[in-house]
Image 1: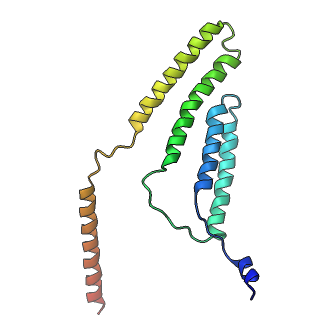
Image 2 (image 1 turned 90 degrees about the vertical axis):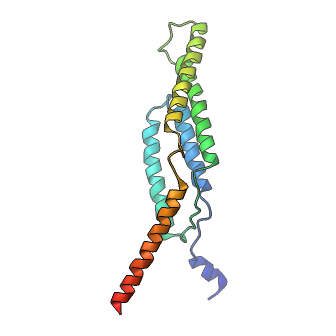
Image 3 (image 1 turned 30 degrees about the horizontal axis):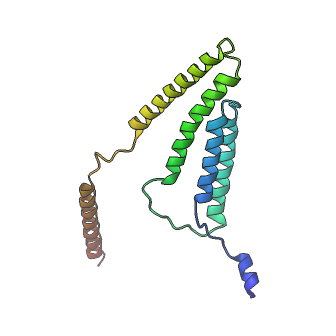
Length: 169
């Protein structure tokens, strides 16, 4: 068998999830920044995201080697990107609603600017309150207790395996 024939049948490996994170961030950005102009985009995104997940799942299961799982604490820099997108989307959605829709046509330009700043600050306060309330906290986690429990469970498993070996003889 020639090398080029062998490569034709080889299985690809999945090197990184960076591309998939980029796609999710870009889609989230479009939805959060411009969903006020076309609200049905959320449903369209949901359907395309389901299709993308299923195609990625098929690729992982059938057309690639098993990827190596890196243990990480969180999503890293992508979290900062998502938070920045949310903050920017507050400004863009308030601006689009106040300055381009006909709902506030009776307001003067100065009143629209005041309404823009008050509404953006109100939504920013709501965002930061929710971020504080939902924030990940390590206050209640005691690492020593987890290590003790893991050690106890390992000892229990060793004792269980030894007892099974004794009964099987």
